[in-house]
Structures are given as C-alpha cells and as structure tokens.
Length: 119
Image (tube, rainbow, N blue to C red; front, side):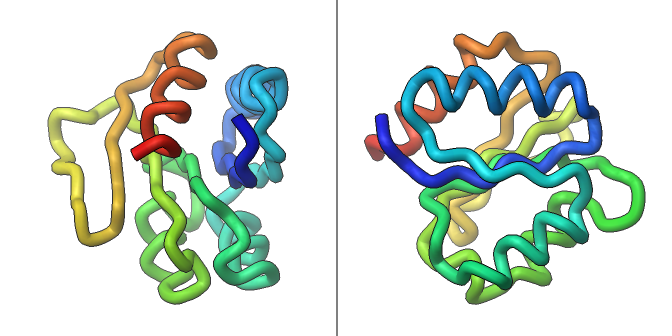
C-alpha cells in the first residue's frame, strides 16, 4: 500500500508505534505532535495527503479544530479520527471522516487504513 499519510497525536509513544506500523506496510508518513503542527503541515502541502489520521482530543488545537481550519488544504484526503469517546461522534461523509476508538492495535489500524484507501 503506497499512500501519503499525516498522523497527528500528542502521545509520543502511540504516535511512534502507529507511524512505524504504517511505514512497514508502505505508507509515506509525516507526523505531528499537536493540532497546530498538523495544520502547518496541511497548509504547507495542500492536497498532498491521501489520509489524515488525528487524535480528537489534544492540548491546544483539537483534531477536529485542525481539520476545520485546514479547509481546502485537506483536498480529497480521507480522515480517520482517533478518540476514546467514539460513541459520542458520528462519521461524516461530508468530511470523509471515519471514527476509530482508542486503544487500537497497530495491525487493526493498518487494516482500517487499507480499507479506507481502497474505498
């Protein structure tokens, strides 16, 4: 699987583990440790990402705030939103957003990424 992915999460351990798993299956992954940094990456490379994976709840700018602020910079990117409160959020076909509950195993994440990119 070859796709450019942006992974945004303030948990260094989780981010490192998931980025490593995505790279092992062939994804070209950029990472950010905060919503603000993720927004900078999105704005610096408009429409460059096939998929944006972000934590919903982060200090400062949340993942959802980052996505809204990115606006057209997202291009056609699909979005996978990580949250410990998935039952509280609905998936939005408008934003191409899918919600994934934490915790998740790296193998489960890569399977979900394969499915999203194939759709």
